[in-house]
Amino acid sequence: MNTPKIIFTENVGFQCQNCGVCCRMQPPDVDEFERKRIEDSGFKDFYETDENGLNWIKRKKDGACMFLTGDNTCQIHSVRPAVCKLEPFTIVDYDYERNTVELALNFPFSSCCAGVEVVKTFPKDEITKATQILIGKIVALTAQDLELPESDKRVLAETRSRLLRRWVEMANLQV
Image (tube, rainbow, N blue to C red):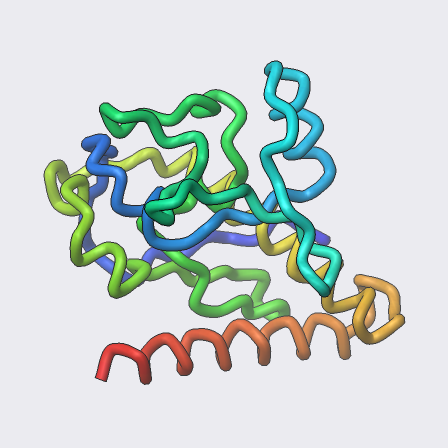
């Protein structure tokens, strides 16, 4: 897969303010590479595997990520998963024919995020790399589901369809 161009649909800035919103809202999934990096940092027994075989970071009793500290910092910040690096943005569309990925603010979570619009700049390189990693993971999972190679246009079309359906579902939650 060629490196896609990242398009930001929102004209906002972002700089993490350690508000902890993203760490409390949804559990991050981790692939084998991310899991190993976290383990190599000295952490064990930090994930659970769901019925689909995906690994998710465990939650505290209050629902927060187990790596969120009392002062809203991340114990694994230097090795955190790609999905964490992408917040407060989410993938809206993957146009494989144009080789572009469209990002937007991840509502409703981003509406509570203290770092949105604090500055008119944001960590574009980090978000771009995280997006590329996540698209690769989503394409690989789709290929596995369809039992086809990742380069097959049917895999790419289904990946795009799944992302668009997810975005529509999330938009309906906001209504």
